[in-house]
Image (cartoon, rainbow, N blue to C red; front, side, top):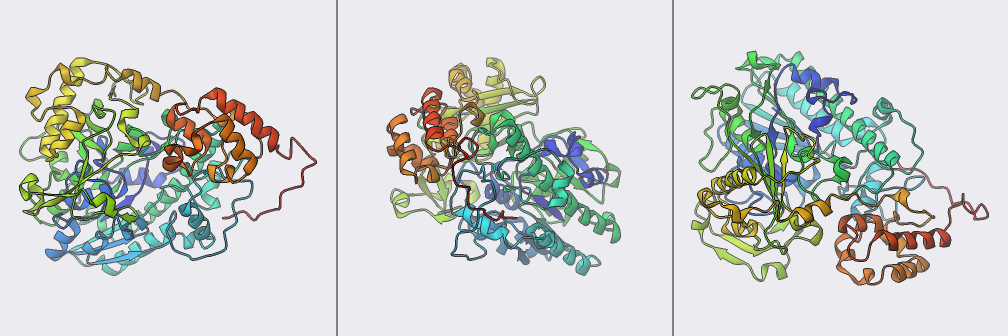
Length: 620
């Protein structure tokens, strides 16, 4: 059995040292499992991680977010072919979009519960009412609107998708616990944003806050006040406590049915979520720091009961979960899998005390390619500003919520089958790819961290000898995982570890870029704030003619630039944070614009003669 959460922060769990979150069932879980202290993600974010869960190999070197490929091995399908009934219960809506539509059908049976995030669930033509007092979430797109619609139908905990998902999983256990040869995957989207939960979990984190609604941070730099940022962290913690409650229901079932005696239990996540650390929210738009890539993992192996309540310090990864499950049922892992059974790490037969691997590779398509040996983390950026060459290799040209366009496919080429040994004799399409300006690793430069002296990754180091060693580990991992030649070229590294030399060092050469990227973003309390202000979503700000005219005068050229194409759903403060003040978004110009907006659109506190706002009903 596997219980999988999305965006579960390791450092906020009591077994990993958190003292302020209420999660007693994770402590209870740790007493009955091996707690892995050095588990790292591989391919990121959501669906690339799930592809690894099926295939036991990294995929981020070859393509971005997408479905299982025709040549991919699938762990649940392999189990099914060997007589194991595999059952998926989930509220994770990405399984049912263009970029994930081939995963759930690999299971024998599956159930899906609606309503998470912007799941296109309930149809409503009339616009939903916004939260009372406003909302700090600035990306006011269709996803945001749909989430407001969905919440109207989730007004009780028993209606929450997470609750229904665990209800269904527990129903499967009640029906099948006395039988053998089954695999159950309970997978909830929580505690992924938005951090929507009910009052009894919020009451665990009482704090003084009378600001705008804020349970959905944008993928951006932190521009909110300290009070607002703290409130969002409490909202995440409340949802984390709801997840803990659901986990407790599973542990109760394990106790009731004596499943500890013969049932493997894996509890895991895909990645974490930044909650203000290093001045960032969320993921994807910044380097993959440890808060995101260093993940929690708990495993109970009924054949190794003496390991319950222990910890394991060696490097393991998401790619090891599929081989672990296959081995438990006696199903051979395929030659294309690069992961290894976790039992080999916990209690190896051939080499006691030896780790599964010397290095762990992780990253996102087109981003930094990262490697860690457990002490050092090396984040290799692209060698050139253009982040090229970069190609998607696929036979399934879809992404999150759409298909590749004809224009994107116009330059596609068919790559011979010999290019990649894992495609099982099939050629693939090679499609030119590009990263948006705000997603390119060139913005951040190459980074090297020593976790022994800097566990929070606040102070990148420049150490040529260590960087050379880490580059050799990186190149070795690229070879092991059949990276395309273009990745070596993009990263500016040779294809043989023995050929790595001082000419391949990048940390010192890119240090100025890295330092500039670490400067704090302007915060909302740095500027005067009228009814319309620098935090107002751009779609709302520019809809007001006087405000749009002020933006044109103070920030000339902005409205005609690609910034609005890439980040048009955010706010001016978020644009400034994303660009580091480039593109004419320096503090001086922002301050002048903020002054004029405050004069043009005063708050009712500033001008009591203004008519009161029409009251709106707050959404749940």
